[in-house]
Length: 246
Image (cartoon, rainbow, N blue to C red; front, side, top):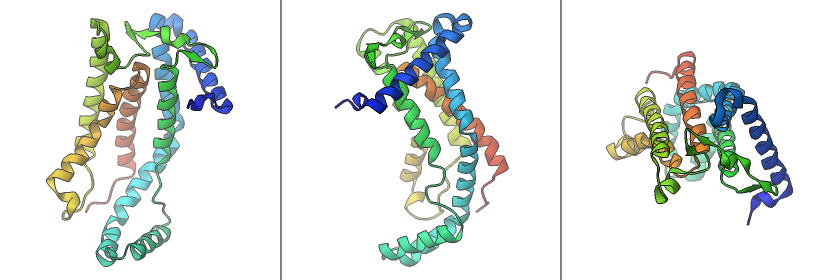
């Protein structure tokens, strides 16, 4: 079943297509054959700029979660064997702290939607019944509509391999810096403190690089810009909203 055959989603996809294509035509005198790639970068910057207020809320939510973490652990010790009581007491704690367990989730939802739209725009040969012109664009010779996995399964030329290598290396560098600067806040004792669990939490930073292999290059460009933006923004907001020292 094609969900984009549903008229509202068809209009949404066609609107996104026309907007991105118009932006690529606008920057073409500056970027030449890489205009569509630059358009994707500019769209990413626009989305992240609009999400700055939400990013501030996310930093506040992270600070709040770190502040009430000891109280949550105490509730788990007291009511760990009574799931219903634990849930009730946890919700009461969030209410008393004027907080929400879902605080800070909006950026993930919005960015997931944007990646999904970019993935679709650079995957479908037709958009709303007309040929998809975006699939004719590339970045320094690497097709924007081709994933690394698809390129490897076909014939991987030098230009495509080089572009993808740069993209993945950038994502991995940002992931490593993020891992070092923002180590997971876990209790000194308990299952989360085990070496295996800590290793798994650290490995989560590199999931973006794994995900990038399976999406078109255009969506991977979005990921490069957004993880870099997230790192810088999070570092700045951490100074403004530091976590309590345990």
